[in-house]
Length: 335
Image 1 (cartoon, rainbow, N blue to C red):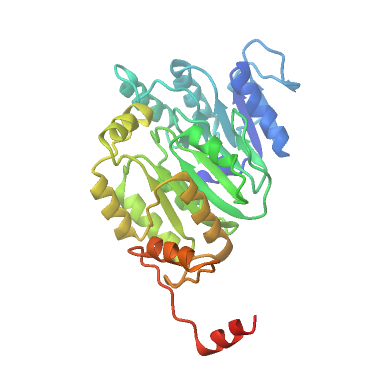
Image 2: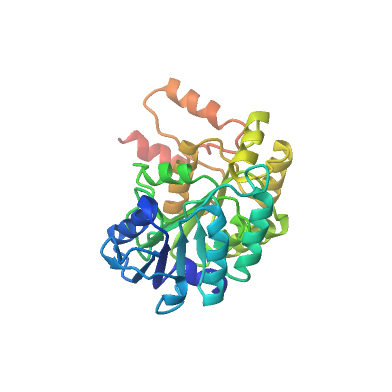
């Protein structure tokens, strides 16, 4: 795994900067997940936060945190991110909104945030953060449905709410990593994904994409995933004019031409899915069986009518039903 993102996603120490319910939830959720590392709240006035000793400032921390949750307003976030970078922190989640996804000074503030971060990785702004269910660590300010797992899929979204909803699924899909990427001001979805697939415990990768920023980074990700035999699927939004407008105000992403996005994904060999249910079920199949060698499948149904429905659904999807062999026919005739 790349050194640049390793400390952030596998932290031995986390700092939670700010007060209020969001920051308290980060600590509570870390405890609920079974996090075993150090937790350092930073609050200028409180002596303790959720039972933990609070430090008045970042410079008072006993060491540089591996990961930090910055849970203050957008103006204060910029300076605090700069302090974390100077301290040598491994990375930060910038929770605040009001950056490039808004009009007015939001774009300038996002540029200031990037400059303040320097070489330190930053998730967001305008995002919840991440859950690492493999190592039982997280920076996540809300409820979720993830449980510790030994292996599973990595999911990256540009919507924190979609992330929460996906963690609540009851379809037996083990989630190893959940990452809400937000505006991706400095650390892109493709870079994060390329890092996570280095973890041999990750069986498949699912990405919810609003817009492609760095095409070369996506090409690198596709090559790397192919070399490591980690299948990728994408849920790309923005096929309608209203959806394209929504992505700009949501995470400042330019959805671009839907046909162009489809062609790009096809060139990369990344299947494009059409909804969250399909997203979950496809990832589950890939987790269980890995990359499928071809489109040959078998269907078992109770009637010819159902068989016809399945055949129609498979039509035009590069799925094929091979004829049964003589041995298979003889075996089935004995049942």
